[in-house]
Image 1 (spheres, rainbow over the protein chains, first blue to last red):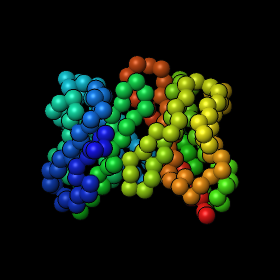
Image 2 (spheres, chains in turn blue, cyan):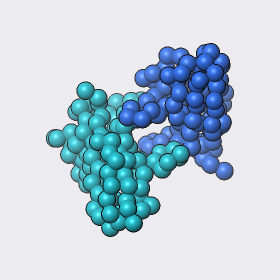
Image 3 (cartoon, each protein chain N blue to C red):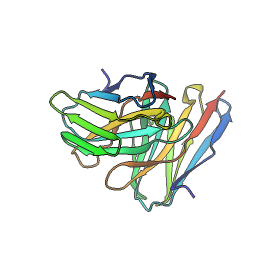
Image 4 (cartoon, helix red, strand yellow):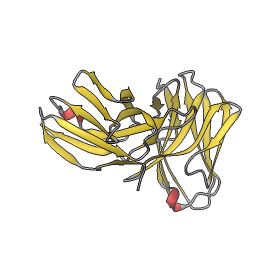
Amino acid sequence: DADVTQTPRNRITKTGKRIMLECSQTKGHDRMYWYRQDPGLGLRLIYYSFDVKDINKGEISDGYSVSRQAQAKFSLSLESAIPNQTALYFCATSANYGYTFGSGTRLTVV
Amino acid sequence: QKEVEQDPGPLSVPEGAIVSLNCTYSNSAFQYFMWYRQYSRKGPELLMYTYSSGNKEDGRFTAQVDKSSKYISLFIRDSQPSDSATYLCAMRSLVDGQNFVFGPGTRLSVLP
């Protein structure tokens, strides 16, 4: 099994719909992150969590929310999806240095 | 000006060539530097991690940091088609809890 597992891998949804992206990890790390990747813009931080009781906004949190259900689980929600949220979404974990990324969720909002 | 800049490429080289990938940055407080490799439809994977200035070598890969010029490089020797990927640089300061800032990535193609 992968160290960081994201579901779903691909999703097409309609504008205005609520959608949840899920992430689970087996690394035992406390720190978890959600990034989105857009061509030419690189990885941008949406939310991060340093432990179950700690949630922090990143660079581009507007329109997103998160839930840290357990040390191993960190989910990202789009309450009302809009087309400019079409992107590749990555979950990541870290310990002392470096990130371990999941394989990503390709989200298309039509 | 973006905090971290990279030439997006694509950069195409013949197999066996020496590849130089570069990032420039504006924040002089950055002390930790990383290089990630990202294959198509995959998440980034950590290649190299360096602290402050100097060189670090790992097999065919060498990471170089020049803090005076705010410039970091990744060299790939004897490049292989399997090195074809997007390469992302990332960096952060010493401030506890500070998150890494990523460059947009350079797409590399190594032609057989």
